[in-house]
Amino acid sequence: MNEPTLLASGRDADVFALDRRRVLRRYRDGGDTAPEAAVMAYLSSVGYPVPTVHSASGPEMVLERLDGETLLGALLAGRIDVDPAADLLVDLHDRLHALPARLSTDPADRILHLDLHPLNVMLTSRGPVLIDWRNAIEGQADFDVAMTALIFAEVAVGEDVQLADPGRLMLAAFQQRVQPPRASQLRRALDLRRVNPTLTATEKAALGRAAALVQIRPD
Image (tube, rainbow, N blue to C red; front, side, top):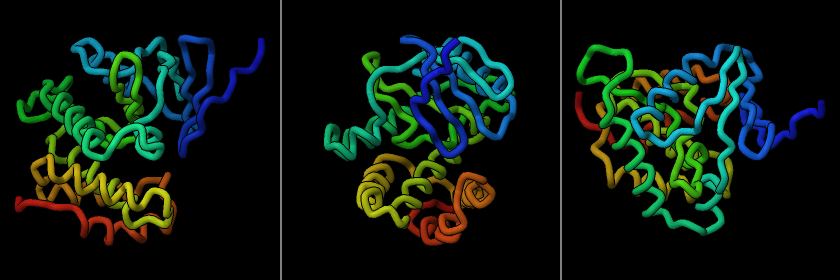
C-alpha cells in the first residue's frame, strides 16, 4: 500500500490525504483523539460546521477532506477583507456559544474551542467549517473570546512582518464586534498560552505585550 500524501504540517500535527474524501490527522506527540472526536460528533449532530469524523484511534483521526482554503489564506491573498472576516469569526463564536454544553450541568457553560482563529477556519463549498478541536473544553463563553483576542494580539506583536499588520487589523475588528471578556478570563488565557508547548520562548516572552492590547471588563 502506498504511503498517504502529506497535505499539511502544523506545529503539533500532520495531515495526510487518504483519498478524495478523507484525510488522516496524526498528532506527533501521541495522545488520545477520542475526546476531540466526541465533541465534533456532538457539534455535527446539532448542525455546527465541523468536519465529519470517520474514525478516531489513539493519536489519529480520519476526517472529512474539506475543499477550499483557510480564512487566513484568503485574508493574506486579499480574497476576503478584514471586516467580513471578523464578522465570520464572531458568528462562529456566537453560534458555538448558543449551544448547550455536552457534559456540564451548569446552564451557563458552553463548548469552547480555545483556538478559534483564521488558520482554523476553512472556507469550503458548504460554508465556513471550524477545524482542530484538540483544545476544546466546556466553560464560560468569554474565555473563548479572550483566547481569540489574545492570539490576534500575539500575532500583532510578533516577529512575522507579513502577519503583524493583519493581526492588528483583525484584533481591532474582532474587538469592535464582541463584548470584552472579563479580566479573569484573560488571565486564564495567558496561563494556558504560557504553558503551550507549541509556542517558542520568544513567543512566550511577548505574551505580556500581547495581553496589554486585549480589551477587558471588570470581573
